[in-house]
Amino acid sequence: MTLFKPPDILTERLKELKDNSELDREQAQLLLQVELGFALMERLEIDDEPVTAVWAILSGMPLRHPRLQNLDELQRRAVANARQIIPFSARFEWLGALRFYIRNIPQNRRNYDFDIQDLDSQIIHAAKHHPHPHDTQAIAQEINRRALDWIEDANFIAWEGDGILGRAEAVRRLAACYWRSVEHRSYYKTLRANEELRAFPRQDLAATTAGVIVQAVGRLLRGGVLFHAYFVDAAWAPNYAKEQQPDTPRTSLLAAIIDLLCEYVNEDVISQALYQSIADALADIDGFSWEIDARDR
Image 1 (cartoon, rainbow, N blue to C red):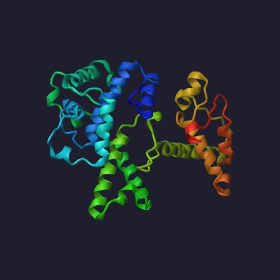
Image 2: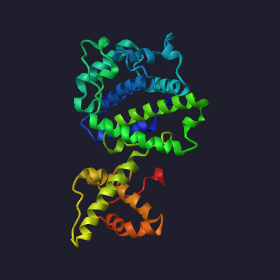
Image 3: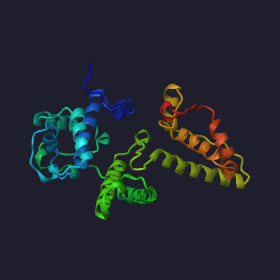
Image 4: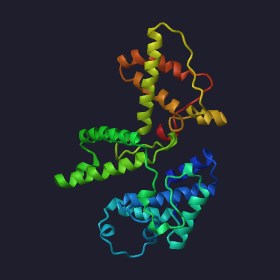
C-alpha cells in the first residue's frame, strides 16, 4: 500500500525529462528533488540562506526564527508537501544530493551552480542561473499585462484580503510567485496553466505565434504569391515525429495554434471571415495528426 502518491505534475515532469534529455531516471529524479528544495526556499522567501540550509526545513526540527514563525497558510502547505516529495531530511543526505547534482547532472540541465568544496558559504539566490536582462524585461512586461487581468477580475484571490495594505501585500506576494514561475519555464511542455494567477502561457504563445503566421500569410496573399508552408522542425510535433502518435495542444505548439484558430472562427462571423481559410489549411496539414487531450475535453 502506497502511503503517499506523488503529484501528477511531478510524475509528468519526470517522464518529460527522461524522454526529452540524456538523463536517466536517477538523474532526472534527483534533479527535480534538489531544485524543488531550492524552489521551496524561494517560496518561503529565505533563498538568502546557504545551499545547505534546505535540509533544516525538510527535517521538521523545531526552529525558532521570525521568518519561519510567520509563514502563511500556503507556505506551510508547501513545506508539508515538499517533505513528502524530497527524501533528504538529514544533513548528510542533502549534502550527498548536492554533490551528485553537480557531478552527475549536465550543466545545461541545471538551474543552479555552486562549488561542492565550500557549500556552507554559497547562497541559494546567488547560485541560481538568472535570465538575460532582455528576458527580465519580457517577464516584467508579462507581469504588467497580467496585473491588468487581476484588476479586472473581482474574484481574484488577492482581493479577498482585508484593507488596502493586506491586498497590496497579497498582490506583491503573487507577483513574486508569478515571476519565479516564469523563470522556471524552459521548453514547451513546461508551460503550464495556473488558474490562481490567471496565467495561461501555452495559449499566450499559441496566440502570438498564430499572429506571426497570419501576418506572413496575409502579406503573401495580398501580393498574389502562391506558396507552400512547411513546418520542418520535429519540435512542432514531437509525438508524431517520434512515434507517429497524435499530438495535443499540451505537447505541440502547432496543435495549440490550430486549436486556437478553430476557436476563433467559431466566435463570430468576423473571425470566421478572417481566419476560416487559414484554420482549414492548418488543420489539413500533411504528415501531422493531432487531437484534444482527454484532460481538456
